[in-house]
Length: 352
Image (cartoon, rainbow, N blue to C red):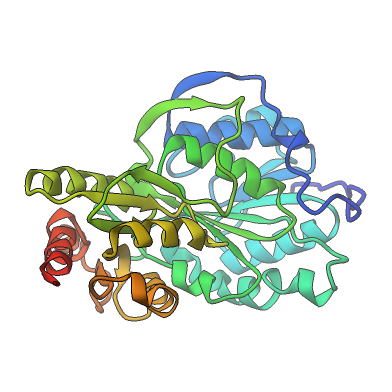
């Protein structure tokens, strides 16, 4: 049985005391997203003994995707440990640990398994800091391998972001690159607010140089991944690469696409979105989840409300369908891809 030693609560910390915690001795290395997340967890645990990692199979196995491999051996079973298959209990434990001054990083093994934990997240995790008028912080980062694109079985590919976005009190983070995965996770762990950290499984094996000594863009900042003049494409997570591929195809047809990677859905960097929309006048929002009440609907409504006179065409949405997530063999048909995005671009460009 794992024994946890109480740590004095650090409720007097500054509002976002992440800068000193983010010190890393490593420089630039070629990492996959899995390796970048593993390195972020390692560096956070090395810098702050209050950081704990736990979940189903995260210690002995190192996680289904080996994201937590080596952490239990390095930091011991008191700081990285396995839990029963009980997602509600995992989050409940994390809430109690946060109250006692720890910085828990629980893992929900797959996105479709997060629903049993929904009550703890929506009823308690998201609300505790406000309930206490800020006296008790809730520095819990819930890691969830998310979204589709890997041909997984039922309940292993879901787009849950709108549930968390509609739950006030949660930050919602979705990296698209190994570098962003490293720095956004470090910043999430250091936040005093709870964070839902959605990891796009289809990007786990993407590889790039990751500089662990120079902080990247902070939570709440979007990134312009490609400059363009005709249409703004707004997306996040695994679909950023899809949007960039579509931009290459669009260029052959004479269309210039600007690709915005939101990186964090809450807080939303609407300033970067607005600046791009004012330049292009046309917008396509792309996400994997169903069309109805997906995040694209919120973005389309806000863009139409606040930037109506800058638009040359209605805001288009390239999304999944309003059906349950399909079997693996039909996944490629269901998920939005380059063709679905370019169809939206074409309709936007047809507007006078």
